[in-house]
Image (cartoon, rainbow, N blue to C red; front, side, top):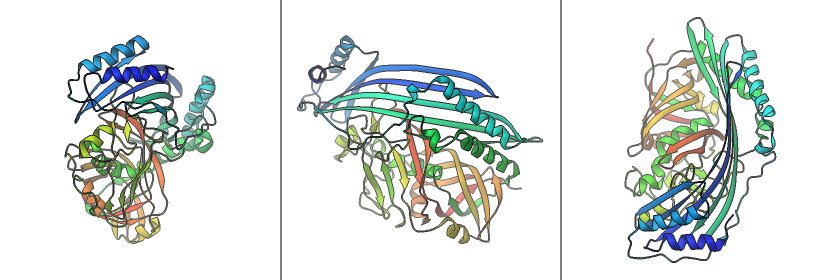
Length: 461
């Protein structure tokens, strides 16, 4: 831990050839990844990551350099090198550093570092055993455990000085069911900003059984139909559609460069009035939560869309300068090796007044998507194509039978207008989000929603 005078010295050096703003990011991270495959320990990976980065912003551009295992000499060299890359005709004011206290902290009951490896491996063994015992049709099981403790120190030329510890734990199970020549995979992988107490909320057995259940459902599934039809998407990871098809287009990364369909639409209706969408990094112990973003700003609750009206974007420091929009505590990155940019935290559609049963009953012929898979999106246009991991036909207002191979095809800006019913039961799904500042933990969420006229790709037969 260096003195605040030393951080001021680094910031002064970084800005000596000009710049509107500078920041320093130091990180020490302890990472554990355990893999259990085919009933055996496949790999054990533990490691310490340490490094620092210094950034200068001038106008609408930035320079960012980083170094691993940065001691005092390396930091001074880093600041000098950054300054040499800058030739700018003005220098922002350098404020006195003030230690910022977090508005919310995420309490950890059992630090993963205090749990011995034997107990962690026992979690994997229990999950493997539970998946196999769920059915004799379960043929393959893979279990992955991950815990991460990231300690960061951030100092900015605006006088912000923040320290944060981010602890996250996750267990993911993939189970393969086999019947004859049919083979189907189910997956479930919840994680939270929690320590080892995660398994007080989600037992290894419950995680494994959900993965196995999904695999067995898919073994019974018929090919999905094709065509334009109403779709009901269930809660939790169903929110990945909003995250990918709409959320990225509301980040300053896209908006500031005029690469989003939502540019210039602040205050306009961009969604059905039943839709309110929020990004909230303050939710206690949720997967994407943290006390500060990676620019020393407190994370906050950002209402992006309210009753269908665009209210805010997600904005980092560089985006704020480009857009003349307040920062929203959205500057995030994977590690010291990346410069921060605007990113989501926990992004979700807020609860409405309908029930899942009402949505199903309102449809004569459609699809119920219980679990979503992966997909691809073109952020500037919001065109998307998503696979559905678990789906059912809806016939005459009732769930009919499982189907497989379904995909959802459309445009995010259209889907917002076509959400006609929003349910009451909000839940969150665990995801990893990749963008220009690396891969970061991000929750997606929603209650059940009904979308009219969505194109479903599938298989005839």
